[in-house]
Image (cartoon, rainbow, N blue to C red):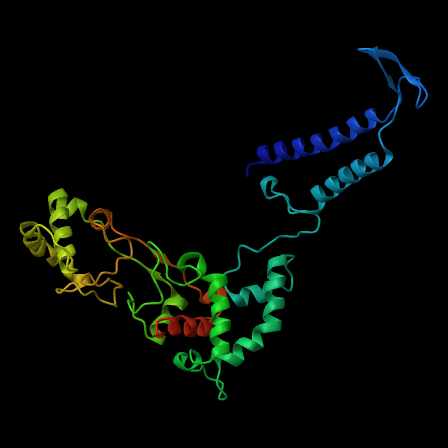
Length: 319
């Protein structure tokens, strides 16, 4: 923020606080010369006002809030005014990019969030290690962890805290967010592939085809794609779309069954990440898709990801 806005916000804040103090002082000062409790020298509609001061408890509470406002303004940060505060306190440290950086920074930082994270790690870190490692000190097989009810419960809690925002509390996803309880996996659903997805994230790369195919071409390819999943379509459009599908086969395969290496979905089933209506499929072909699954290795660390991976894997193994 520029120095102008910093000064502007600071001046307005102090003006309001000081103005409240001046107003309170003037309202609590007897400038009429009339003794307390005596009638004032004016009436209104036949009613004569008495000189009654403000309640002392109310005045004291008001002064208390003014003092607290001043202390808070100078002690704690104002990010809109580029002021870190006398305590140099912050709710979180935005520069942290890994658990290791967080641990080092917590020794010198005044960030409350970083201190709480490291306190939790000191308290529960051993629990995650016990669930994730075997007696030899190597990571347990994720499929083995998935059969441990206690580990699955811990993994579920981690999932709800970190993954449910996108995939839902029941892990069934939504439009643009995969269902993790079925057996349809864009990048593969074995334990190693699930862990790799969590560790490193995924970036979709479905290009937009409207400028290459044109309106008619998009219509024809859409018809062919819908036909692959068993839908009734215009056969002439579908035949023309099949010929154009060659440019799509590089990722989705000649048979349209997709490729895990690219995260290209199977077009022959009835699972549609962004919707399976004709309009939704046309929109996908026209504009492409660029969904992003963030990498969690630098946020959760590998121990926790090992446990979450086991939970996610267990969801698709339920019968």
